[in-house]
Image (cartoon, helix red, strand yellow):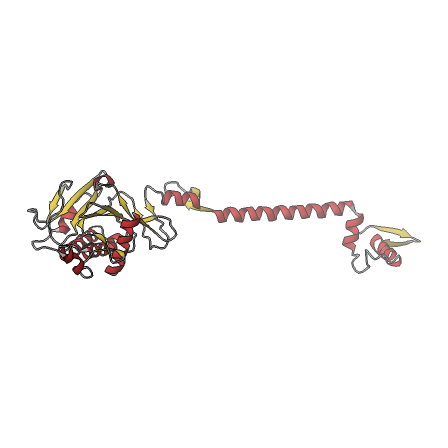
Length: 334
């Protein structure tokens, strides 16, 4: 009930009286149009003012609680535990990610070399694959005014003047071998962990599996000539070395639990490569040593097993293609 006062026997509401009084005084701060009963009761009735303040505080509290509940529901994911009857276990997304994608279970690392297509390299329970290209012909010499890798197509006359056989200098063999390895699905899946080149002059080169090998022989020879001069070739942005000269012997760069397998047509142990790969221990690293020369035999001193995959002589590229296909089938890489 609105408060009233009596004047000359008549009852007048307090709000109407004050409103008319302020209008007559021409109070600009409180025009008559906005001086409602609720505003006047709020101004002159302490009880009403307290109730409005309590109502406003209650609304702010409810809004704050609702925002906190929304944040909690957004940040946390409630998972039902089948081992508990009707129980709910709250796990944050970060904890769920750590448990389901931990390094021990997934074991995926990315090798970040700028400007080069990078494939994930899996370091899980399965062993990695390594390749050693033995006796590769990468002989560099100054021909004219440039430092070049000798090959029979461009330097046949130069080699004959030096009383050399032009067909002993075959950089195309190691070029084809690298294209077969880097272009295989095995390498794209990240299973190849390292490629080594041992030249016939005793130089040892390490090639990272994510290196993009030039398609043409001329570009490849220019890259290898630069490598022999500068001892390393970096990726775009200088974030890592793609090719580099390393110290001999190659065995110190191979993992301890590795099985070194040499391939030679003259080996008395002829095997079916698919069956041989399937029977290998998947927890140990496999190192395949393949000759990258026109003729001759590989160095079998550090090889654990010497096998032959064909009764006929095969080129290095064909031999490596058979190995990669057998490994892809065995590891179900499609």
